Length: 249
Length: 61
Length: 229
Image (cartoon, rainbow over all chains, first blue to last red; front, side, top):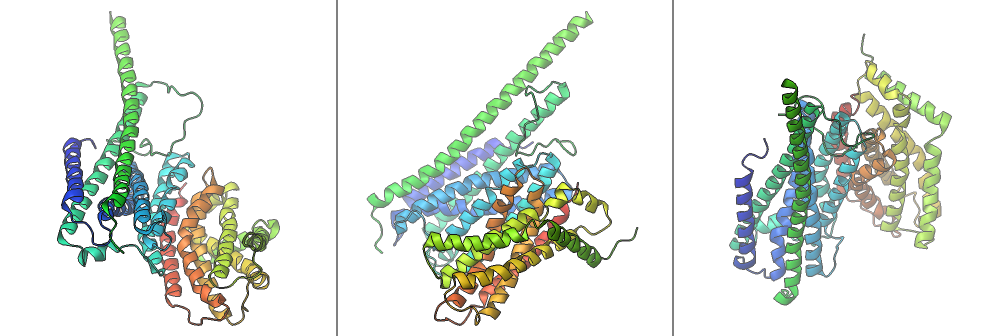
């Protein structure tokens, strides 16, 4: 049951996102260099951190899938990548807006963080097409897990390597926080990180519940022995079906 | 570099925050369509169960 | 049934694949032809007669990377289409021997292609002479090829039994190969500078070796799961 406790979680998430907004816009001081523009930081950076952590988490879930052969782990990994892809798109948009405001260009190549983020997104953009291109659900799940583990390992390595490339302009978040980020900014940043983490978890739970409902409905239809409405060959899908190998509880 | 004045930076910040909320809202909208589909399927299945019960009641008599 | 020694299996698989290539000539001539054609494309596209430094390094490595994609796409096709996978899974051999054999095949293909493409590049486009840079260049080729072979052997197996393997192979492998490209291109760029800059930064060989090793481990850990049916 993934829907359990979803309502209090959603309420806490909504409250902390709202609190973050107020704190970021009205309570945190303006940055000495970037001024008001620096407010983008509170939405951009936590989103980026959550996207990457989500990808790594999906890799860990994929490891659990290959170990246990439980299709639910494949579903978890799939949904984690799904949510992280959505977050990733917002990271690219907000990052691009920041670049435009701070450096005058919509895209800057001499920023390794932005470039490696795009690279990671391009890699993960092939996850759904890969799933879609494999018909057998069991093999689809297995191959998707192999992809998720490989790509999950690629995420931190890629960031380390691209950062070695010289000449970057991106503000170093973590060093900023430990170093010269003033107290209030630090508080608001951690608050934002907390809120966005909750948002990621809430959306993940929402999606898991929806997928679970769909799977249960399919199972109910099968139990009732009703013929499928759709004629012709079975519709291919990129989403895990949860119908192969074992029962779903 | 001098800090950007509010009237220059404002639209950028607003744009970034709006983009964030817009994408979350689009996601919610997509979830809504999925929910509607599940709801429809479930009501179809309920109808079917009712029909069956009725016909088995008829046969019983 | 006794399990055959892994080295025997790898050699047998390698020999079979090379014999297949020598009979059909599916990959190697296409790769060589492609790389020379790409140099021509760069000549016309960039409208330059000679290249040096970063640009030369980039053109050479992008060409080699794209040529390698041709082999990555094809290296498992015979196994998937003619029952090689099934026969191999039924045999008592260790599964990772197939991965090792495919890596070696890719390494050999790349070496042969580079025997054609690097001299062709030096003659057609490269401004400074290649001779002095040769030892360092060889190192870059070895570590670069290793990275391409490791990722190609894993992604090739992932993509070959999908509906759109010609698309998925390159789409999945290219982002994974970008760090390899970054490493080798930055490594060789100073070698191609007209007045030779000399010192090669030590970090690129190290980064490449580390990347190759990590993805080698990942490939060996995950390959078994791709062969399970």
